[in-house]
Image (cartoon, rainbow, N blue to C red; front, top):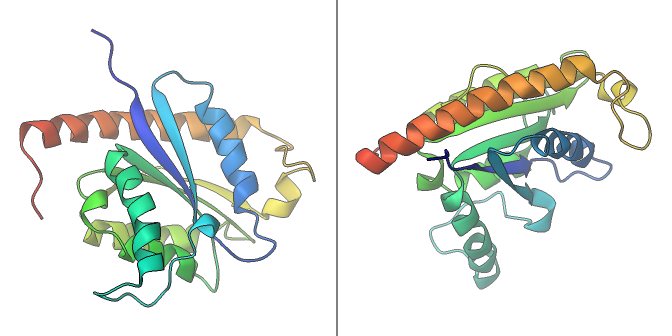
Length: 194
């Protein structure tokens, strides 16, 4: 019996004007397209504009946005979060999105992809590892980072020297699908309780 495909939500975390995240997301989705063991759902936070102030009584507009997002996150077996580094961390839009949800992250793997200047967004990745641990998610070990990202991609969004990044993407996806299947089997046998 064939192994079912992992449902992976790819989340673009920046909503800032002039953001680079969609370029990285397109590149990564192309890498996923080389495989037949993953179904991808692309979630761009710019499409949802969630408030950064959480409340127990959200407005009708926020409830509608959450109503569109919640089932997609619940269905996902795994997540890939694409983030820039802002002020040595990740953007407020991403933190708000993460915080508006709780059970959807539990006992599921999260892979992290970052971009930025000399550090390539790695400080944002390290901060996100702590956040996802608190939410009972499993941040996989390997990540992908693009140091000095404007120099790494052509103006049309093509990676100039793709070999190392493509190899890193394969490793990341291999780990993500392993964790996705392992945790999915565990959740099916014994539902996770936080």
